[in-house]
Image (cartoon, rainbow, N blue to C red):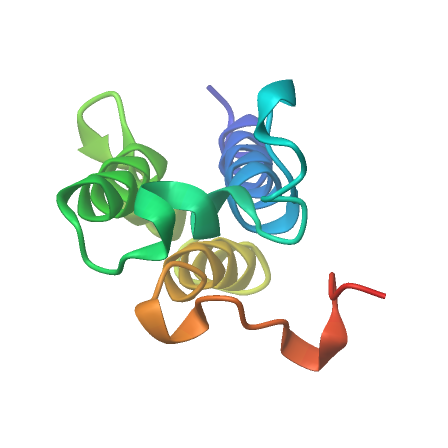
Length: 119
């Protein structure tokens, strides 16, 4: 896989993960009667309880998957193939940091700068 293809895959997979867990509100099921319309999918996990086994699993496994590629650390591969230079190293680092920070317990129901807030 080429460098451009690898970095495109990294950014796309991180974007899809962020979109579905931390941006999309509501529920994929129609039988909830709208009680989760104001919560993101991440906020609905385990009814909002923090640091449960499910949340830890959903934090660690996607992080490992987003960092690994063919059983080798994809972040380090991307960093090494860019010779640790900007801008690709910067984009990869920012994408990983955003995904990890969004899962912190302190970020529960937080809308930074009112983005994605209820109107």
